[in-house]
Image 1: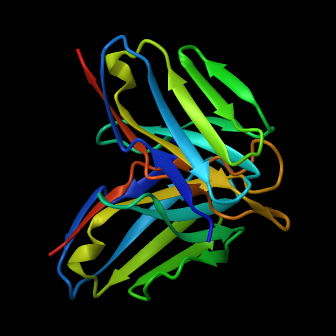
Image 2 (image 1 turned 135 degrees about the vertical axis):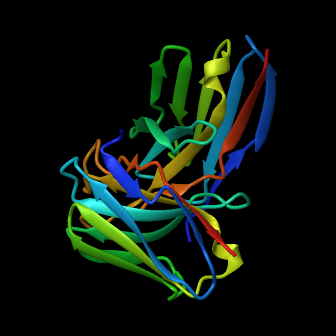
Length: 116
Length: 114
């Protein structure tokens, strides 16, 4: 256990389905992140939340919709996805700030998504 | 936008040989971090380098941060089978009161032949 829990670990969905990925951190961190990891690209930052406020959205298609109800929980709502969206979706958390030791990411185990 | 290039993409070594991966950023970094991802696993933080020219060691692993804070390297001495995995560098650039998300390199896949 890393202190960051992601569910489900595996998800298969059709292109017309609506599903959600959940992330919960028990580390007292104030920032949470969604990253996408696919075979041919580096880890891609999707969204950043700092104290529940979204501070970054890296041109992610609207079929991905994040939600951060509090600083411990983060969701990624999925709808009308494409097969190319199949990837490992990693949640991470950190203490955010401009000091040494800040912004070190603790990752969850990931949710492996397959879109048929 | 900021880019972080990492080479090589793959490295095959015999067990006991040394291994090095290199990371270069298009912009000056506030700090650089290194992560390791085992096959089937998730990235795990190894170390953070902050100061220009900084060198840090963790047992057989040596991490360096360049003088210009734009490049970094990870060197493993006498690799072991437990070192197998993908090593990522990640650069941070502070803006305002805190850093944005890290920019990751593509990673170097270390494959060890016994």
